[in-house]
Length: 155
Image 1 (tube, helix red, strand yellow):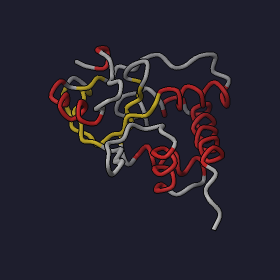
Image 2 (cartoon, rainbow, N blue to C red):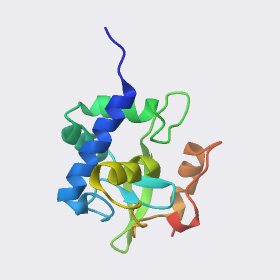
Image 3 (cartoon, one colour):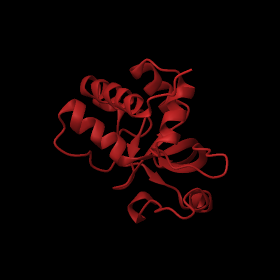
């Protein structure tokens, strides 16, 4: 059985995301409706399993393959030793704090997809989605020994 070509799979995921965004810009940066929202210069917050399922559909892959590719290539923040990439956080949405299962996706993964495959001259600006302070302990644990989301990501 051949080993997966993770670079090719990342390209497929990025191409699928960018082509979909070109037709439907609301798939990114619209809190409550999008598959990912940019919360600071380094990260998008992606509701799960919506993000993995949507990328899978757009790239003609299985959702579990999407998760594996994103984890193995370092395009999502994971927690050792299991490399779990989904955490329960609280976010400010429509003026209220709401819980959600989400992943922190490397902004370079999304922004590069838009630049390369959709002709976007630069990455997207920050969305209005903010993490609630009560999620600080969960986020701190996930980001142990990594650069955490900046102050702009919090409310």
